[in-house]
Amino acid sequence: MRIAVIDGQGGGIGKAIVSKFRHSFEEQIEIIALGTNSLATSVMLKAGANEGATGENAIAYTAPKVNIILGPIGIICAHSFLGELTPTMASAIAESPAKKILIPLNRCNITVTGIEVKPLPHYIDDAIELVKTLRGDQSV
Image 1 (tube, rainbow, N blue to C red):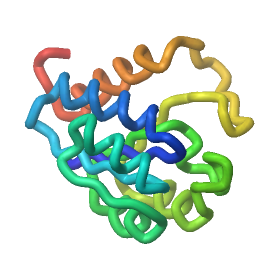
Image 2 (image 1 turned 135 degrees about the horizontal axis):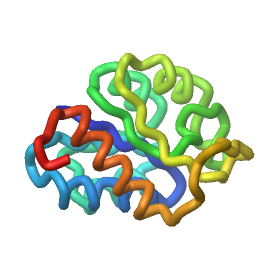
Image 3 (image 1 turned 30 degrees about the vertical axis):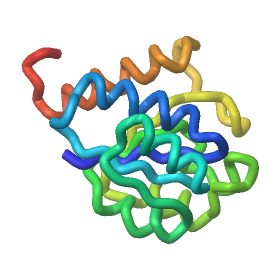
Image 4 (image 1 turned 45 degrees about the horizontal axis):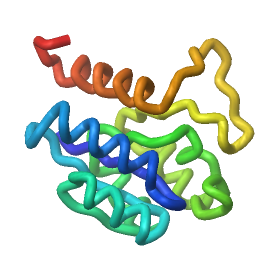
C-alpha cells in the first residue's frame, strides 16, 4: 500500500503523521512524503518516509498514483499554508482517485461540524485505525 503524506510550512504535522504511521505499520506500507517546500519534505523524510518529493509538479504527478493521501484538511484548499499550496496542487489532490484521510485542523478558515475537537496525535491515531480498516487488518 502506497500512502502519500502531504504537508507544507515547517512540516510538523506531516512529521507527526509519518512517525506514527511508521511506528504502527513498520515496513508494511510505503510512505511518500510530498512537501509544498523542501523543509517540509526533509522533515517527513527524517521521520521515516520511504521517499519524498517537493513542489507543485511532484504533488500533481504523485497524487493519482497512491492508494491513500493523508494530511491536514487544508491540502484540498487552494492557497492554504499561507499560500504555499497552489490551486494546481489542491485540484490534483482533490481529484485523485486515492482515498483521502484529512486531519480536521481549523487553520484555513474551515470548520467541520460534528467533529470532536482533540489533539493532533489523537486524530493521527484515528487515521491509523482507518487505514487498518481499509487494509483489512485483523488487529482492528
